[in-house]
Image (cartoon, rainbow, N blue to C red; front, side, top):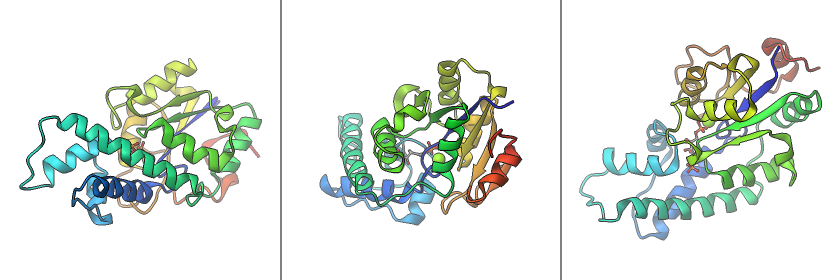
Amino acid sequence: TIKAIIFDVDGTLADTEDAHRIAFNKAFADNGLDWNWDAALYDKLLKVTGGKERIKFFVEDFLTGYTKPENFDDFVKHLHKVKTAHYTTMLAGGHIPLRPGIKQLIVDAHAAGLTLAIATTTTPENVSALLEVGLGKDWANYFSANGCGDIVPLKKPAPDIYNWVLNELKLAPQDCIALEDSNNGLRSSLAAGIKTYITINHYTRHQDFTGAARVFDDLSDLPGFYRTAGLPLA
Ligand code: XBP
Ligand code: MG
């Protein structure tokens, strides 16, 4: 039987990617850069997870005629810090709701004694900002492990963040299911040996979900999801 549900955050708990994109653009503008990521470009940039890694990917693979400053790594860290400030401010405004079924699933599963955890490439402050609004200021009480951002060196699609969470929970992969929205996320959870359900979104619907236990549009039919995933929830 399933003992734990491990949640991805971006794209899975909420449709956050456009807010990330806008926050990146604001950080670039604040720093006098004329870089502007539109939705079509961002779709390509999502190939690389992690904000700092994504900025570097953009500079290396998409920019021409730009000479990196000597302290490029520090500059990227700075840009990303400014981006995180913009992003958390946007979330605190309450404009990004949790996706259909997500709050109910978390409440139901927690009440039934299932273990809940987070496995994300995003920054911890971003998770707090999202879930404080979505689940309330005691949001952290729902989760037994909070795997975020730079806590592991290799981000998704590497399995490291899922392995970190499994180790924190002291559970085997067979005890858990993962909920993801992207090919990078799916590869990460599958590489950690975890059965994975997908909810697609605007940015990920065209991606390859081979190996997923099931692909849903969203979790608006929670009873259907509980039956499919064999969860002991009504
Ligand atoms: C989400 C991401 C993240 C965010 C940016 O992937 O790719 O990089 O877009 O977050 P997943 P930071 O849902 O698979 O975790 O800027 O905070 O890194
Ligand atoms: Mg995701």
